[in-house]
Image (tube, rainbow, N blue to C red; front, side):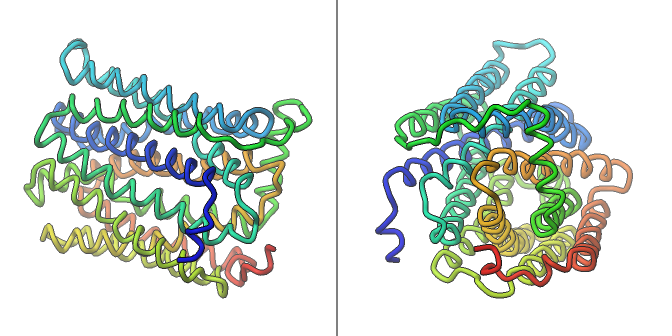
Length: 405
């Protein structure tokens, strides 16, 4: 792959930051889910994990985008790493028994601060991505970035599950603390010439400018809405501890395998798209990929065999990998440089918060409908969202990437 030989050192450091912070977060996420279900045996408690993270994420995201556009992109990323490091330390203290009063409350508090930290990670990464690479490399570099991200989604859950099974929750949380520090060091070592701070427009005026840009752009708004609702309704990942306990009857190692399965498919897809990027019929590819993801969720919910379920989740990751690369490329090509932080933050509201809100929705629906029917319902809603987007956003449906250059 000739492209890899031309990667500059700055981009490699940015990728190191991304993989380390993803690993840290994923280990925390899988251990927190197992920890809380072990304490409560309640699917609603799993859903509340998403709500506890989504509320502070939602509150901070737009301000994070403004801060990244008007100040140092790199230092805000470092600050987010250090906040995640402190959250992991709190979880270590809970797991080790140093905090023995209301452990569930302390876990939710750590999750809430994790949501606030995550609000800064996406805008910082996307803004530095555009500073480091020329536009001609965005499509392939997006594939590489997606593969690195998805690799973290493979290794993080698997590593978290194995650490819980073999060494305990305290060791797993401790691993997250080290990875957070490593991510901060990678970003501090990054030497990139940041542009002068943008003209200091009033805070809310600047945020409103970013919102107007996104909502008036049918392609960006359509792509973000499609992914948001697909994740909101179609994600079954947050309910995996319940599937493992009640349907497949596996231990934490099995949870790690199923959490990693979608990312295995997405990594494979990302690497393939790095070598053979999609350049034609981008909108159709995006819509078809999200529809395939929803169909896989329905089949997963109806499966009773652990390995078939894992295969279906891996296939869902293939479809999700296409969706992520296409959406990331569209976002990078269609966004002006001076608005990357704000647009990335708004994208985070659509995508990042939808993961957590989707977890909350899954917990509520599982309580009301039962575990399996709730996931089937979510998959069917994802297919409905694809149909509605194709109808309401014709520019996205007919999109060719060369239109954005």
